[in-house]
Amino acid sequence: QLDPLPALTPEFLSVLNKVCEQCYTDFAPDELEMGVRELILKDLETFIRRQFPAARLQLFGSSKNGFGFRQSDLDICMVLEGQETINDVDCISLIESLARLLRKHSGVKNVLPITTAKVPIVKFYHVQTGLEGDISLYNTLALHNTHLLASYAAIDRRVKILCYIMKVFAKMCDIGDASRGSLSSYAYTLMALFFLQQRNPPVIPVLQEIYDGQKKPEVLVDGWNVYFFDDLKALPSRWPQLGGNTESVGELWLGLLRFYTEEFDFREHVVCIRQHARLTTFNKQWTSKYIVIEDPFDLNHNLGAGLSRKMTNFIMKAFINGRRVFGTPHKAFPPIYPSLMEYF
Ligand code: GTP
Ligand code: MG
Image (tube, rainbow, N blue to C red):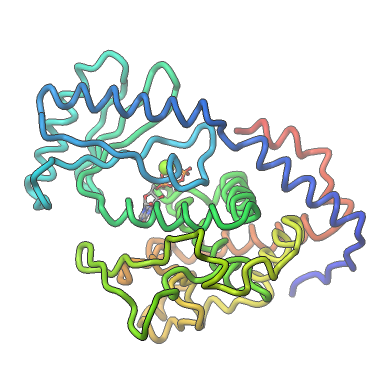
């Protein structure tokens, strides 16, 4: 029941491409802003270490993965040096002490411990920059998936732009907030990367499938293998398809919308960036869910697990609308574009 799309003229593609490029330049933070994030981190670390001398803080998420907006939150992971892990009880009490401590810091406001979530955190608001932040403890897998996403972002400029557009699209359509029942930015980034791996010819490889010898190396973290090929300088010799895809970002964006509305069968298949061969929902025993997105390292984690049927339909409708809007010339060159951008 999808509307047929008109043939794409070179003029139309060029406009679509401009819109995509513009979206990226509008939202990408510059180096100065990235530096500010590091300064906030150092300041917090110094403050926390007065009470917890072993505390070490590290940024992860979009401050580090290459897909950050100017206003993206600060995702911070704290560990205690000399201590390998933390149990659930200690984790909650440490989060609570951390919250009490941060309330004494004059640079932050709205300090709130959230101890009921799967990953307990302390939320805060950084007054001077207006940035929101949260601190989690021993969130080691997240540090690794941040590094994985950053590696994909570094392979090709189009990866960065497309993942940005995907995130902007999700936020604009109100389908990008996991705390309100939809999917997280991280989930949409995985969807965009999966599309780029499955495109023919592919834009990016499956880094978790590139290794020497017969067997994938094992680097275990919290019981999961976090190995991936990260020697990007050596990638051209390891992945001959590099550079084989020459589509513009505009073509890829429309390609993505078409892929998820026309081609990809959500009932059968899993969005899975750790292997090139299609993984089925049957393989994973995840058949009761409609949108299934497998975390690249924590293979028991389906990022779509929290979606209701209603929200799933709402997300699918957003993609169907997006396909029509970006795939139809008079609608895709939007006089509405600048005002929509101001929404952020
Ligand atoms: P923005 O903050 O929206 O710019 O994107 P982000 O990538 O930082 O997303 P978010 O702040 O929601 O999540 C921070 C990081 O947590 C992600 O980048 C992942 O590294 C990690 N993460 C791992 N699993 C999950 C998950 O199930 N949900 C979310 N939200 N994050 C996860
Ligand atoms: Mg974030």
